[in-house]
Length: 260
Length: 262
Image (cartoon, rainbow over all chains, first blue to last red; front, side, top):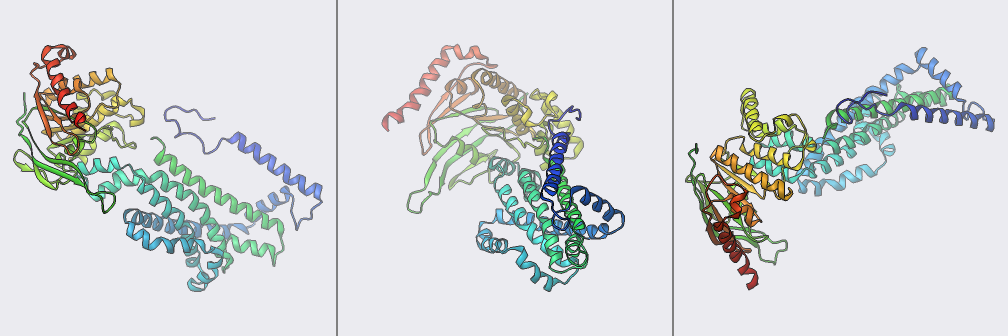
């Protein structure tokens, strides 16, 4: 346990390690039990220790790293593009009801079409390289961030806005001093959702056409390599990537919204 | 001791708010309100709910434009928020993500003061409202009274000639409220600013004001002006004097007449 001295929440670890470790042990034990009791062959469900071994070898023999790195770059760029576009659009929608009325049907329609259905089309348009994945990631991140920003900006205390006006604050100072900090908890909530979707977006984009990335490695492990433990090791890597991204957003939240 | 200030004058002030539906007539909040507050004077505005007291303060603070009539300060028309006027709202309205000191510093930053002058002025203001020890705390860590004190310090930051207060202590308990009213009188004596206080409380109006202006129910007009001749500095004992009970009776009479008519 860390000693908590001053702020109530700033120094708390992201999750208490004790219960998390216990839950993990239970999960692995149940997995092993299913494999043993069901007498499942490796190509249906490999045992946890087989996956763990394959995970380590895949990382040490250089199988995993290049694919993981490709996916990390796609996620980082796609998330950045989608998040920035989402915040800007969300602000515009919040400030202009006319804009919201005109654009929201298209936004909702774009969100309602599954990214899985759009991905092949986007792969045709933007090619097999990084660009298509960034576009797919960006699209999937955009919507939750835009909606969260719109809601956040709209819910900024009107009293504070009136105060700002009475102090003759410029539009820019109102944005920087009142609207952004006021909407920040909501925006960060949208980013939490968005960052996990960014990982999904990257994998879907890779399936639609790529020569590198964790999504590609899953296809290889299932197909030509027929290495099911590697497939599971890749799934573990993807999950860890998602958790790491999410933890980064939560840390940012602690840093910026910590004490209110 | 008294800083040179000038009169705040409202002339034939009319403010209407558009109705919710197209057919309904607009709500007339103020209808030809005229009043004059002399420089350095403390005036209390009292009246029934919805009589336009707050509307008057917002118009005087330049936050809303009257349909007719003008408000002037020292002869200049108030056409928008004015640094010579400080506004204290009913709620403290502190930025929750800023410390007390940073909240008090905000008007100075917005006015483009350099960092060194801001720090010096904030120190002075926190001393004035006795919040020096709370400078680095966030608003959530303060009591309701401390928050409102911070809000007053913020309103005084640019040394306004006129302080407009919209039921500033209505959220506080009765005892704290009396103490804060006396503190407010002390502050006003030191800064020499003109003050207009909106209140619901007759004793509060009498304790604070040189003159109590009673407004009619909506649309607001001046129903009566009652001069409070109690000497200064005032204390809670002031409220026991004969002048005061006479004034209170007069205020009550004017407050109650329209209700009987309705």
